[in-house]
Image (cartoon, rainbow, N blue to C red; front, side):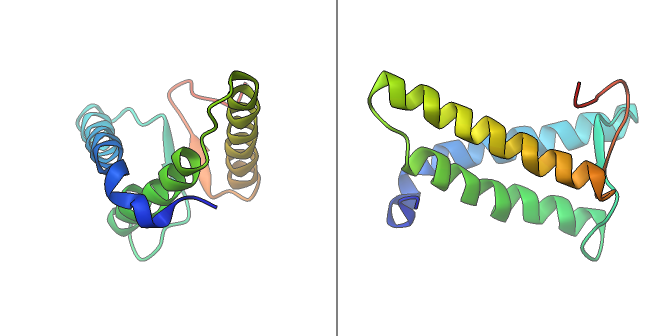
Length: 108
């Protein structure tokens, strides 16, 4: 598991991720060019995006960085596991219709 007690060490990463997540939402909203959109929202799209930005992503950051290995061979395996997990989650979301790709974005 991640090092949840050390969450303050990850604050710069949380801020960076939240800033650019909000920036993406802003530029895709004003340009009407989303790469992906959630089809199934909690209460509203704003609530869904806020939960992802301020709860889900920080949790994933803690799990990813809190278990980050020091040896090079283990780093490669760590990246492989997380890329695979991310692809699996996105594939499931796409299959059940929870997310929709647009503007040329795809899993391919």
